[in-house]
Amino acid sequence: MKDSDIQKLIFSKMSPETTMRPLKDFKLNVSANTGFQKVFFSVRCLQEECDTAALLSVEIAMSKSDLEIENAVSSLVERLERQERSFYSMDCSMHGMMKTGVVDD
Ligand SMILES: [Zn+2]
Image 1 (cartoon, rainbow, N blue to C red):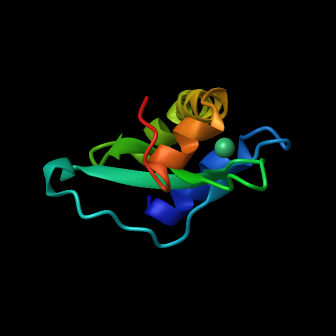
Image 2 (cartoon, helix red, strand yellow):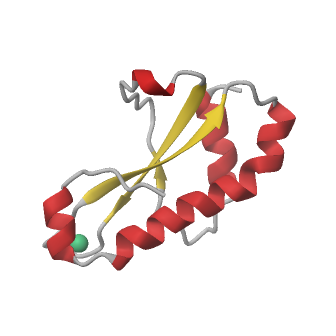
């Protein structure tokens, strides 16, 4: 499955209220992660004066079949939602320090 297809699949399973947005054609140069497809979403702080954006991501092993990916989608969504919650649980002084940072699991 292509990164963009995985992204679409994940996004289709998210709650309609999600604030996450699929990040198109975003590639991070992480040579350490060969063998994995990485799919990115972005979130943005709702406080106008803060407006920090963060990247959320999940990794899927290249060896996974389409069916295995489909079966894993709900856990991928959960991982992203956990990252989303941790982003919103930080206060804006922390957002300011991270400015377009990456939120890990
Ligand atoms: Zn903020």
